[in-house]
Length: 442
Image 1: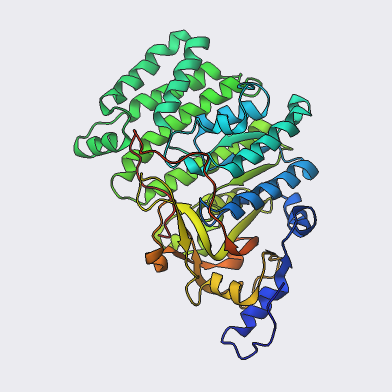
Image 2 (image 1 turned 135 degrees about the vertical axis):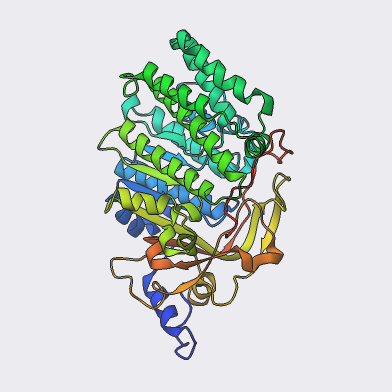
């Protein structure tokens, strides 16, 4: 239900009227997602965001919208902001191929890289349980896949490459061992590797590039029909890009963000080709990856993201959907690598997009922007909250990305109050340090 329109003297009265005109109630997935489903059905790529990695409502409604698009409009794959090897195991499970003695919660317990709660949570477990049941009722070629887009899994991806080469091309194992031996002194610690390459002009770049070339040679002509070969190639690409990413990250160079988002966008394109020209895909990632960077201050720093790259590559075939809320609670950590906590999310700062949405709307809503985005609110430049896996509510003003909402997204899901995500287990201190790279509001 919308707030009353008796605020014609409100300093942002025109913006509030515009928000109310766009908003539709959001109560049940079967009835209140129709307008958004219609918008997404016409696209080949639908990118669904989240304003934090630790909010129940974002995960639940993203899953509900994804479910309708899979059921009603034959979306055939999902790419998420997660590691390729971990998500490949999920992909094989939801397709009924491996680990069928496990349930979704047991399967997700295999996530070990901090922060595990991003994927090892009850909301994801419930969606994957449904997706497996949906898939098993259909022939293999009609089943929906689940894949990781991220670039962090350097050592895990190397291990997966070894397994494939050993079984399919043992003559190529020397190239794999050379790459592995180059990384051995760093004990699977990306910070140690990156720091050493900064101090000494030596890296493992040439070795992983040679390994990638060898994997491409060994899988030539097999990738389209052989899922294991496709997996091997993607792991080799991850290894090469991860090595470059970590070397760049240690310099404090924001170019590392671009390496990561180019890698994720390139992986989306590979998944689309792998599933065929008629396939349609869903992308799950943080708003800072999904919302077009050109509509934020990220562009001023030369940063790009998935939303921008997909719009440029596939003009007219992409829908970007953002998520936002006013207050509530969130699952996050007080510092990088520490166990998760349930934290209070304070009221949005005055003058932000969230502040105006709260003033206009009393209840959860969908806002589909339409072709005309020149209105006072859609074209205004305001802060838009972005909570990362590390969060400090006392520094709330630092968690806002200046944004033109109508150019950043095609639609928005709005929640006045939200609830913290429910992890399947409490976070442990990581045995393998990871560089801080998640969205923090820049």
